[in-house]
Length: 251
Image (spheres, rainbow, N blue to C red):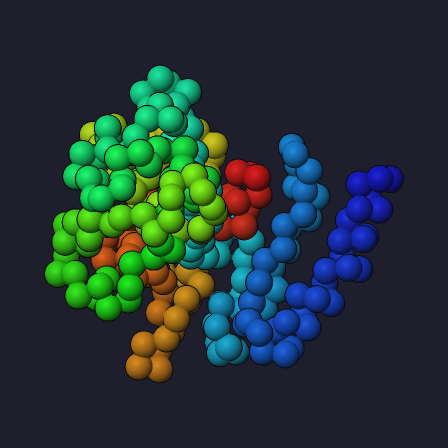
């Protein structure tokens, strides 16, 4: 009876909100997942992938979404903490222990923990012009390594993509393999997150929700973040695509 009451409350409370968002033009489709620590109580899709009436309906089990910065939590932080558990990474070690190129002025004292807690003092992100001007992934990473703190490390919280870019590189250096390979094998597969991935292939584009427009056409399957895109779609700050069912499993 308690579960039934929760489900009724879920439908009565959230169905009108989700449908109003579509009616008002905020989004063409959405998924709502409600659950407890060990079970999904309600999982429902609304609307379609695009505004076109020919577009596929949203399916909570199969529609892939660009997770954007949720990548930081689901993939990057989880990977970091697995390495901590295995004794391969020290949270209070300087980042430069793992990424020696991160050796700009004032960076020697920045720790991995400060990257995770956004207290490194590094700025929020590289400029759009700098990202676009980088010729390739290697040049973008050189820009990241050359960053210096804007504030004293540990003095304040500044939410920063630069932190997450560095964390992705820390994981890669320790593991000796690509970030996506490690995360897929050590996080997604053990948790049964069978739909979750970086760089969705052409075989799933028809069920991937678009994240932008290009010359009037919806763009799907390409991470909607300039830094992650420059890095080939695999980055510590963005790049993971997933379904609502997989995200509910992770949660």
